[in-house]
Amino acid sequence: MADIKNLEKIVSQVRRDIVRMVHQNNSGHPGGSLGCTEFLVSLYNGVMEHNPKNFSMDGKNEDLFFLSNGHISPVLYSVLARAGYFPVKEMATFRSLNSRLQGHPTPHEGLEGIRIASGSLGQGLSVALGAAQAKKLNKDNKLVYVLMGDGEQQEGQIWEAAMYAAHNKVDNIIATIDYNGAQIDGSTDEVLSLGNLKAKWESFGWKVLETNGNNLQDINNTLQEAKSLTGKGTPILIKMSTQMGNGVDFMMGTHKWHGVAPNNDQLKSALAQNPETLGDY
Amino acid sequence: MKKYEIQNVKDTRSGFGEGLTELGRTNPEVVALCADLIGSLKMDEFIKENPERFFQMGISEANMMGVAAGLTIGGKIPFAGTFANFATGRVYDQIRQSIAYSGKNVKIAASHAGLTLGEDGATHQILEDIGLMKMLPGMVVINPCDFNQTKAATIAAAAYEGPVYLRFGRPKVPNFTPVDQKFEIGKAVVLNEGTDVTIFATGHLVWKAIQAGEILAEKGISAEIINIHTIKPLDEKAVLASVKKTKCVVTAEEHQMNGGLGDTIAQLLSRQLPTPIEFVAVNDSFGESGTEEQLMTKYGINTPHIVEAVQKVIARK
Image 1 (cartoon, one colour):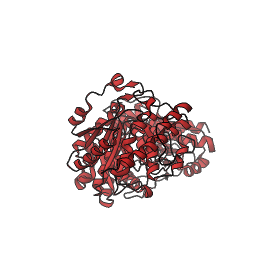
Image 2 (cartoon, one colour):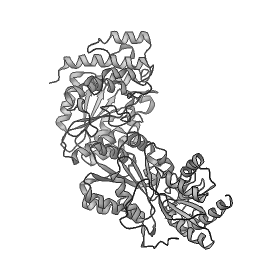
Image 3 (cartoon, each protein chain N blue to C red):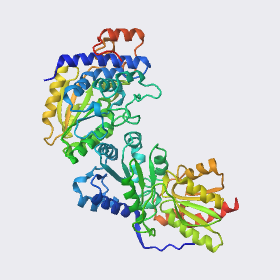
Image 4 (spheres, rainbow over the protein chains, first blue to last red):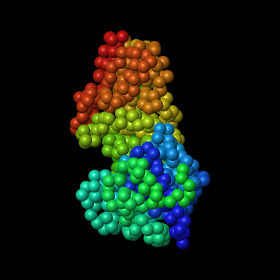
C-alpha cells in the first residue's frame, strides 16, 4: 500500500521546487510540471524499482522511466533529486549556463536519472519501446514507463510506435498520457482535437486504463493495476486526467501557464500554498 | 602506378549484408532493424540465423530510429537499415535528438544512396545525406567504396562505441579492395601514389578515380589517389601530407557539392594549406530516372569529369 501521507509531503516540496526553479531564471514550464507532480512522485517513490544511488545508463534489472514531453523537466528534475539521483542543490542551476539541468532533459551532460534527450515531441514512446525490447532480449523482467503529453498525441511518430508495440506484444511497458486538455496555443480541442483517445489507443491494440492524475490514491491504484496487467501480451496505456498548474490556484484551469514563469508576488503566493516539507534547495 | 584487379562485380549493400551476418555470429549484442526493405538491405541471412535479434519496423522510419536508440540502453548494438533517403532526411530530428545528442550507439545502415539508385528517380536518390549526417556533433560518417570494404566497415562500425552513419549503394560495382581487410575508421587509404595532383574520392567514385588515374597516366599526369572512406572524422594528416606533395586537389563523390566530402577537404585546406581545388559532385540539382552510368554522366560525376577536373586544377597551380 502506498504511504499517501509521505507522498503528500514529497508532492508539496516538489511543487515548491518547480515554481522556484522556473522563477529563478524566469523561464521554464510550470503548468504541465505541476499537473504531473502526483504521478511522478508516486512512480519514483514506491511504484518503480530503481537504483538512484547507483545510476547506470543501461538500467539492467531495474525499472526505467522516459519523459517524452521533455518540457516538463522541472518536475522530473525535482523528483529525481528528491529521490537521490543527484544533489538537491543542483536545482539552483536549472536552465543556467554550464548546468546539467538543461531546459529540456538530456544525458549529454551526464545527469544521473536521464537516459534520453527529449523536447522535440513524439519520440519518447519509440525509445521506451526499444528499451523494453532490450529488456526482453536480456531476460530482464523489470518494466519500462513513459510519460507523454496530450498535445504530443498530434505527432505522427506516436502512432507508428503505438502500432508497433501492439504488433510486437511489447507487454513490459506502461505508457501514460498527461491528459490536461491544454497546449501552447489553447485547448487541445481548439488547436487540433484529439477525439476519443481511449478508443483510439484501444483500436491500436493497447489496454487502456483511466485515472485521476491529481489524486494520489487513484494514481497509485491505477499504477498497481497497470503493473498487474503487464506480461499478458498487450501494451498498457494510462489516460491520466490532470489539471495543468495543479496545487497553485492561480495557475489552474488555464493553458496560460504552460511556459510562463511566476513573478515575485506570484511565487510568494504559490509557495504559501505548498509548505516546505523536505527543505528547499 | 599500382594496377587494381577487379575480383568480381558486386553491390556494396551485399557487403553490408555479409558483414551483418558475420556480426550475428560473433557478437550477441548486435541486433538489426529494418523498415520494410529486408531484401534491398540484404538482411535475409542475419534474420534467418537470428530471428529474435531482428525487428521488422514496417514503413515507419521515425519509430525505427527511436526504437534503435532505446535498444542501446539495454546494451544492444542496433543496425537500423533503410534507403539512405529515409535513413537521414526523413528522420533528421529523430537522429539528432534521440541518437546524436543522446550519444546512443546506433549504426544507421543507409543503402541506395545517391544517383546510382537509378530508375526510381530523384525522390529516392538522396544527394544530401553526407552533409546532413556530418553536421551532427559526434556522428561518424562512413562511405566505403566496394563490397569488401563495406563488409569490413560494417564490422568496424559495431566495434566502435557511438553513432555511425554507414552509407552504401544499390548497383553492382567493381570489387577490388582486399578480402577480409582491416577497416580503420578515420584512416584514409592511399590507393596510388602520385606527384601532380591528389584525387580524394569516396564511395562509388573511388573506382572512377582509379580509372581516371589510368587515363591521366597516359597523358603523363601522375595522380595520387586516396580513398576517403571516412568523411568524419577526416584523416587530416593523410590529406595534408598528400597535398603538400601534389599542391592541387580534386574531390570526387556521389553527393551534392554543398555539404559533401569536397566541403570537408576544402575547409581543412583553407585553414591549414590553401590549395587549388576542383569538385566532382552534383551541383545543386536533383537527379532523375535513368541507369547509373547515364546518370553519373549527365550529372557530371563520371570518370571523364574527374580527368577534366584534374586538368583544370593543374592549370591553376
